[in-house]
Each structure stands twice: as structure tokens, then as C-alpha cells.
Length: 297
Ligand SMILES: NC(=O)c1ccc[n+]([C@@H]2O[C@H](COP(=O)([O-])OP(=O)(O)OC[C@H]3O[C@@H](n4cnc5c(N)ncnc54)[C@H](OP(=O)(O)O)[C@@H]3O)[C@@H](O)[C@H]2O)c1
Image 1 (cartoon, rainbow, N blue to C red):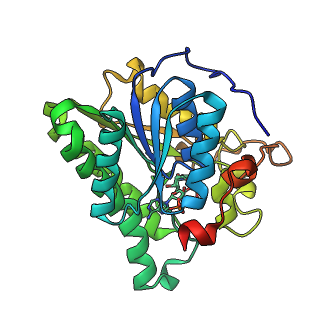
Image 2 (cartoon, rainbow, N blue to C red):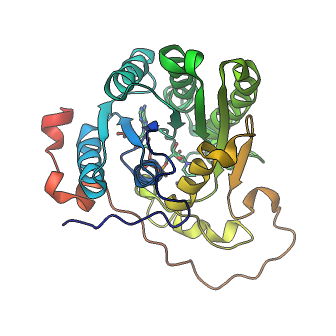
Image 3 (tube, rainbow, N blue to C red):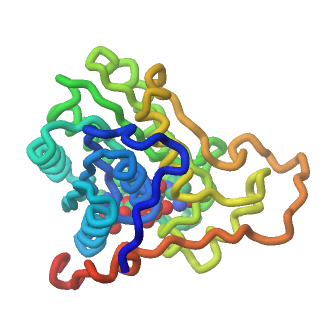
């Protein structure tokens, strides 16, 4: 099914014409919405993650629907050599990289005492070391010489992260890294900021027991959940001229969860908002679906 290209509901057409963006985790959920908003606004985009069976339909679908240039690239951000290969590919294919969005990441629900060494290291390696790997790779391949914008997707972990100690620790590390790099890399013309989403109903909902994310609407004073598009708008804000004077900052997009300690009662609307979980790329663009066994082994 062909979907007709929809214009941005927020930004002007052509805002990112001639711009090139790399989005990790860009085939699913929040990352796909970020890639789609970039493409809508005229950018060329490389989407990268581990699963080609998700990347291929997403890249083909976006290219077709927006008559745009979108490339899939296999990359495990835990591996520095993969990150270097991704940045080299983007520079070779499109001639430059203006924007890097470090969105790829993951974690699992567990009380801290049940997180074993392997699980702890896997989450830190992805969310913290993966972001570091991508920042360094982007700097060396393009941004130390030419500048650029980096946006790191973190999380609402400001008062700890009960149930996900590993992700809280890794995202707090990324926020601090962002502040340091904002100062050290200003001389290169690199601006680096974070977006910290609260509960966003994304494809990530499939990674938790059914209903887990959906029930989280009560945990913020706006008593709702965010959408992938809203996070994409935050990222595009930082990459647009609106972000020209911003670096080292974090935008919280969490319905006020980070400032609400629960002691001030906020009436419950009586049920969760009607926000649909977005489809996987192979469900959204079934004509471009590929056999996972064949492309991912
Ligand atoms: N949804 C929320 O409420 C929420 C809130 C705060 C923060 N976040 C963060 O926002 C980001 C996007 O999440 P989402 O909700 O859109 O969930 P999602 O659909 O599960 O997205 C996670 C993406 O990260 C990629 N990824 C995971 N490990 C990777 C690795 N080692 N190398 C490269 N890519 C990797 C995945 O692709 P592959 O499997 O193909 O590698 C996937 O596309 C994640 O970092 C998530 O933790 C989400």
C-alpha cells in the first residue's frame, strides 16, 4: 500500500534540504519517526541498526513515499569498527554528515539485584559506550573538520530509574558526556544536546510485558503518553536554526514526569489516552518486507 507523503505538521518544507542525517535505531519507533521527519523536510538519511529485515523495508518505504534518498546500513553501535564503517558509508554516499542522532539503544525490566553481569554490561555497552563510539566515529569521519549537530536520545532518569538501574546509569552518563563534549568540541563547530523522552508509545512497547508502557500514563501530571512524532519534532528543533544557540542542553519531553513527585495530586482522566503502538516497518510497508533469515542469518 502506498501512503501519500504527508507534510510536516510543524516545520516548513525544505528546512533540511541538502542536509544529511545519520539516525541509529532509525528503522523502528522513535528513530523511524525522526528519520521520517528529516526526510519530510528534505534531508538525505542513513538509518542504521543491527537488523536488516527492519532497515530494508523502512529505507525503501521512506524513499518511495517521499521520493527521498534513504539508505539502510547494518551497524552494531557496541562495535567501534561498525560505527566507523557507518560514518564512512554516509560520507561516501552523501558527501557529508550534518546531523547524527544517537537513538539506538535498549534495556530490560528487572530489579537491580536480578541484573547479572552480562545484562548490566550489555546495556551499558549499548546505551553509553554505543553513544560514545558513534560520537567519536562522527568526529573522526567528518565533524572535527566540518562541524555538525549531535542529538542523544536519553530518558527520564532524573530521580533514579527503579526497575531499570542499568539504563538509568547509562543515560545519566550520556547526559554528562554531552555536557563535556559540548564544551570540548565547541572549537570544532560541533553542537551536542540531548532529548530525554518520558513514556513514549513506540515499537519499544513490544519489548515489555503487554500493557506495561500503556499503563504509565498515570506517572506524569499531563496524564498521557508521548508520541514518536513529538520526540522527532524535539530532535528537529535542535538541528534547525532554533537550535543555533544551544549546546550541552537536555530537552525533557516527559509530560512533566521529571518535575512531579506525586505529592501534589493531579486528577486522573479515567483511562489511558488512545495512542496506537506504531507498526513494525515490515507491517507498514509489506511490499518491501524481506526474509529475516536471509538478511540477518
Ligand atoms: N519508548 C520510550 O518510552 C522511551 C523512553 C525513553 C527513551 N527511549 C529510548 O529511545 C530509543 C528508541 O526507542 P523506541 O521506543 O523507539 O524503541 P525501539 O523501537 O525498540 O528502538 C530501539 C532501536 O535501537 C536499535 N538498537 C538496539 N541495540 C542496538 C545496537 N547494539 N546497535 C544499533 N542499534 C541498536 C534497535 O534496532 P536493532 O534491533 O535493529 O539493532 C531499534 O531500532 C531507545 O534508545 C530507547 O531506549 C524510549
